[in-house]
Length: 187
Image 1 (tube, rainbow, N blue to C red):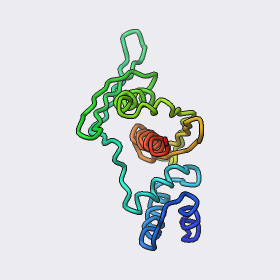
Image 2: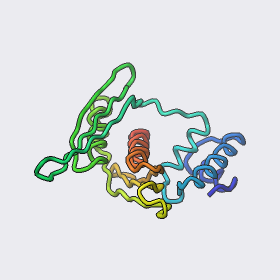
Image 3: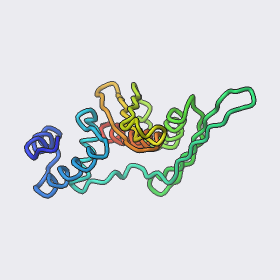
């Protein structure tokens, strides 16, 4: 995916003006990230966000201060999961605690709850698939994990990616980027 012509054509398709240094930055970032386990052919939205960042674009809709996930096992053997998310939108800090049927569901619920009053159209963004792949199975529980999240707003669909040895971090990367992408294209 790291060819200059491919990047230039993709930038034109997306309407992202890119000069030579920005194209070079995308190529460098793609090579580095693909070596780490990212696969941008499968994550169109993450590629677009990477290209936008290479032009100097910054996401200013919200800024996450902290995210925490807690999973407990009760004495009856049931598991409960809660996520606590603190998010800045402008000068306002929102903090929400949400339960979910697992860590990613709880994180998604807490982040959405924090953003809903500022971005009511976030409710139009639906996560439709969550895929996990272990990249280096020989590392057992320390393996690098790739997470792909498919989402839609009813008009368009997209995929984002996260990669980390920590499955929660990889999931968070893909989830946060999916919501940023959805909000960016909400108009």
